Image (cartoon, helix red, strand yellow):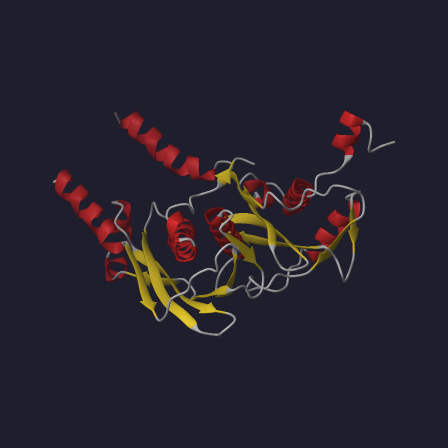
Length: 159
Length: 182
């Protein structure tokens, strides 16, 4: 009985320290399907956020730069992206929003992962940042899928 | 004795948790026929970005094709202001902190307060004013960051449901959680 109680107490402290991964994704079905090369995107904060600055703006710019189908423009873009990060003791979150030039929201995503700031397992913070950059790339590709899938299947786009 | 203690702890726990949502309607709003309404939501004050993103996602999910969620000023605008989360320690905490904490007694409560102004952008008319708060208790086994998250989750559930209800009355209950495994 005592052993069972001790085990339960240990579990009580161990379980909350386990890996947390969760995502909340909403995408407009009519938007974000254009995967052709040269989709013009800009990076600008949306009006719905209280915080209008993000240290992840240059990271998002780099992610956009590396995406073969996207062209980063300062002005007159067709789509506007914004990424921000909440790192706290209660959880670490990566947020991405995409809206069109008229302000209509196309995608709103939030991803929570203990990989982003995994101090409990002794990982260094740069490793968390790497995980976050990778996740951001995945989120951008989720809204703007790369055209390579179509090229491999159909072969028409690549010719 | 054990039963009495368990009932006492449970009683303290549930007595400490509270939810309040007040609506003060000042007018009526109805979407135009045929065209989906453009709805905007803006969050101000002490609120994390993840909360705003999830609120917008839940609202958009609830609207379906009945309304469009836009950034800036839509036909109907929800301006939400969040107060900083307030921590209240019970007097018990100062008297016998460790003893009560050991038995799982709540050591205090965390309260999140918010107010919402619903307005029609074209006329500038205020349709309604809402206010609400959520309180959850913390203690030895309910750590403050976790309880803060609980408070945010509770506010998220209430706000998303009320916003969807206000825009699409027939879609009550559609702002369910849309989480998934990444």
